Amino acid sequence: MSTTQMLKGIIDGCLLAIIKNKEVYGYELAEKLGDYGFESFSEGTIYPLLMRMQKEELVSSTLKKSTAGPKRKYYSLTTKGELELKNFVERWATLQNNVNRVLDYESDKKFTKGDEMIEK
Image (tube, rainbow, N blue to C red; front, side, top):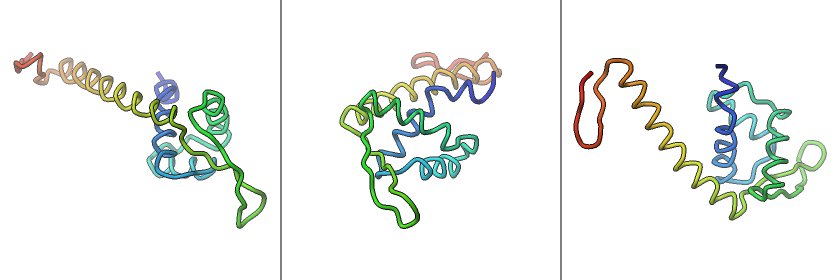
């Protein structure tokens, strides 16, 4: 399974988390993702996701003047987007916990089942 396949769905939550902190434009989102190690995401990948999120009313956009060139479209979270981010964080925590438990157990490490510690 490729990293790209694993990231489908996860990247939406990451974008929402970045947008939550401040209004950002597409290129800035690509740069921020790169700063976090997601270097394979270009503006060309991000813009279709943003368009879909805007259709789903998770983000809104406004055009603002740019110091260099044409106006830029800045994205911000809507109330629906904030709720989706909250739900994503909860789903991610559960998924991360479950995957880590499987990997720990299957790697001959200790794991917790309920309140008891079990060694394989």
